[in-house]
Length: 352
Length: 279
Image 1 (cartoon, rainbow over the protein chains, first blue to last red):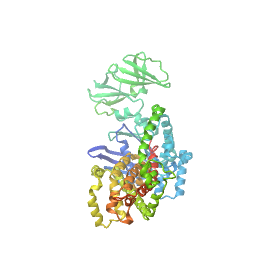
Image 2: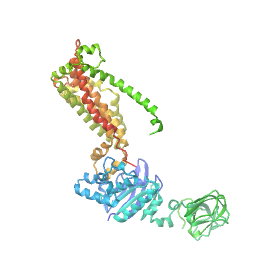
Image 3: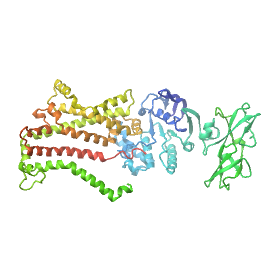
Image 4: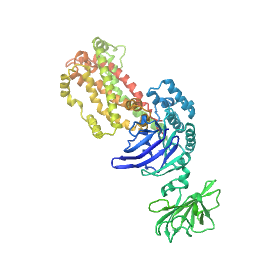
């Protein structure tokens, strides 16, 4: 068992509290992604798990051991840094074996582990090179190799792909997913990119301002967000929100001509709401009225239509296939109200 | 390289300026060296002439080498310089690492306090230093000089090295911590190799003044067996008669070891090895 349990974790710097009592349970072999906008505390939380930041309150368990006050090396974790943090004056093989060597492992055993990791990551031809002679993707693999040789209970990845160019990022994403399948160890992965989160994760933890907004499988978060923040954060392009309020027991959305039918239990009249629609759940209706088509982005497989409502609110609609829409048309919008989400404008909570 | 840099005219101008500087800087050295190979009369008659068959003489070198203790002076200077540099680099780097790496109360004040030494010349405290050395029986030992030079070099060393150590990526040190390295291992095996150019800079800055110093050897260690080269050369300079052949020969020879040390350190200076550490 090498799951990770966080109980009421807090962190304060001076008077500023950055992590507000987080409870989280990650089971053995799970791929857990911390995602959120920058400054939400996701990296801090990971560094607390790693032991690089002191935990102010609460407890951290890794594999059933309480590790809250232990040194990083005693926690059974290994970490891949955003900057890779390779030792520049050592070769690839030395980089991967350095930790083991300094901890007194016999040379032959170190070499064996390094070779095994190099085989998994296809680094064998590069073992004698220095980091500066490697490409970004290769450096990334060496950094991952350095974690593999230690055989940790938990792998930590701190935004490992953000320094790579777009194409390589997709490749490395696939490689990390494969690696997880191959090794089967528990992994925690920090990113601000919701695409990485959706594609890699068994479990996503959405963080905002040091609090957990929602925890769940990627599709659960997509199909059933708890609040406006998660709804807006998960999914690309982001969900569209239209302001409105409850009137006479029904919805009144000012950007829409007709009130969308709903069978939700609506709050009292006069409550401000936000009506959330995913771009992929709407269609542009060329015969309709009420929206001006600002711009159409044609990507081949999909086209994004940018609409402006009479109220000035902007929406993105994803149309599959080639679109014959032209800019500056007057268009309408069609959607299935059952696929829409409703949020309380004040608290941001989902109205179910 | 930019287009302007490759412009042959600019390049020539830059080289001309640098060559002129080299000529000016090396001229006194050149004069010392050529005159050390001439007899006394020629030194004064034509100081700028190269030694020829008529004026060539090794009398200066013979005098210096006959003055039996000359090799001892050499050895003393060498021991003092190398030992002082070693301690300056060791303790300077350790203090700099602590200042750069650990957040503790008074970190800033400690850094300022250590940097103050840069502004206060150590010679102001000569009398007190002499009293201390007498009290601890260190007068006329090489240790007296090594200790004083270490103290003299530390402020600048701490100042320069802590700046460089702050630039070593935190991730790198944290990677070491997760790898289970002790703080000493991180210091010795990760950080020191990365600030090697800075270490070389500090070494070069400190080496020349220590090697050339006359003041402290004269006051703290004037005994025959602890004389340094600079102090030893003074025997040839009298109040009324100066043996110029010997003085110039001694100075010419004194250049060699320090030049050797410089070559060793400057190789490190040039080598930038941090590239490829991150990103």
